[in-house]
Length: 366
Image (cartoon, rainbow, N blue to C red; front, side, top):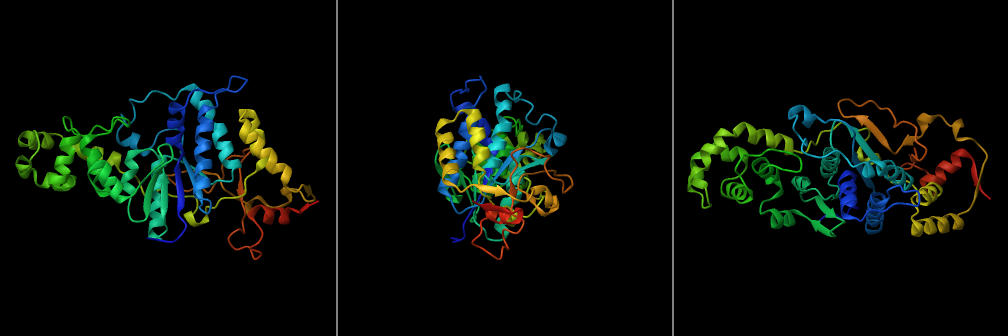
């Protein structure tokens, strides 16, 4: 087992929906919904507490279609549109995550799972341990000796043995499982008439999808209900099975705006957090942020941040099109966080990223 500090990859979109549906509806005094905000941020804070030395990268789905919609127009077509009360909470969640100093990625044309899969594979190649925080079952296909899943809502960890225990198959057969069974939540069709027991019978008895279609004549000898008449059905829906396989496969070669090694947590902007928590009326977090601000030294601005060329300051929050790396920053945002451009090579390693920035800007404690 690696002794390296794991990187934490968070499926923000998964937790967004889960928090919205799992928690009772909350509103502030102005009637604005706040329940999903509180649920998601509470999970982020829990991860920070559990993994204080780890980089925590939060990934959200981008708006619009993905490459899967081009392959199969009915992909996720069964899902209702996002509730207005949830849509209103996305921007505050993004703002708070940025103010917490956490790297956040939103990549057009793909899903959060694909971005996470790409980062996880990059880490695996460097033998860097990865913990993926999600509630989605399809990400189980990524589990290996370096990658573990954690579900903060159920407080469970899942490694390779955990995947086998839960699904009855190892991680490398999860895609084949979804190809046969389908996935109603994503409207992945699967093979009509193939249920969980049949899919497991095929995978445990023969192997993956290629093995199954290469040994159709052996299916009748398998010991599960309906095996004798299953081969013709599988042959009839071969194209649908492989389409489902493609849709269920997490993409692991998404063009990224920067290497995983360059994504780092920065110091939280407690003033921004205080303003956001006041707006949400999260009293406990307001009190916490107030106490942190009151205990910190005040600073006097002697040089404007505009005096430093923008290209010398690297944005933490990144949005770009997966089809081609544009290198463009996320449009200006009042609460976006910026990483220290020299943080990893700072000659004075006692300076935090924020203090190094303050040193550049001429911010001196009074």
